[in-house]
Length: 387
Image (cartoon, rainbow, N blue to C red; front, side):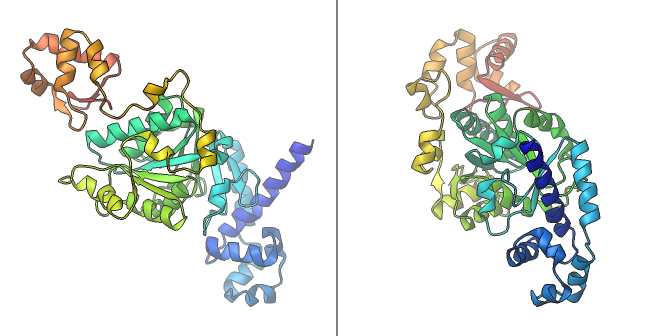
């Protein structure tokens, strides 16, 4: 009975928060200022016209609040969320992410599908280019796969490229991940990530501050980036061109007093501009999961879990330490594996030309390596080592 009453109170509270967000011309910061002045969002709607105007509101906005503008839309919104099995947490809810509440302009309410307990877990954001190199995708996938089993929730934006690789890396390692959308939680973008979103909801969560039905307008993504960094103890930039949105996320993380990490890249690659610049400016250089964990607060480090079954040697292995692996491979597989690279995908014909083996044996070795999870096949019969 007590839990049901608490849920109802939070739902009623959410109506006022969502309603204020629907008042044209008010904005999130304006709403937050009013709530601080009147002590609660419900009290804002109960304030007199003169009290509202005394807060510096225009007469039009003050009259809109007095007329309870936004409340009817908020009620419909919450009803629609319930039908979609979507939870809505307002800024005053106990379930609202504590780290996100600390930023200067937190969302008035967030919509979540999936496991809401992840909102209070320690998290690391991994973001980067929508058009990454094979190296960038492999690094993002590996970092997420190394960090997630150690108890860190991997946060990203479910965009093409680095974001998707990060989510998949966490999921494949049986870890937890959160996708922050630049649309409503019922509008999956890009469309090809529909199955990925379903997998994330099943063992993680997708969240958004945008109302249901909101389409992914370009201006939404810089707004959502502050939520990605705001949920996280730190943000890792894997690949980012000079004007990448990922650099906006890094700047927001700094403004939020969070850690910024960067994976170094080839100085001749445009995609390496962002992380290399961040490293010059003082971001922590990352080439393995331990570089991230070492910068976290001591209390957090002590809480992080060691991967089940992982030995101390495996946990401290450095990227590229493939000698023990190749020693265990059979003849053809070892030859083909050693011809591949982690930073550049090779077309199947290039692999055949690089080894002294008939094409049939090369294809058989590639298949065996892929089945064993040692290499990855990219579109167009291109192959790359997994880091």
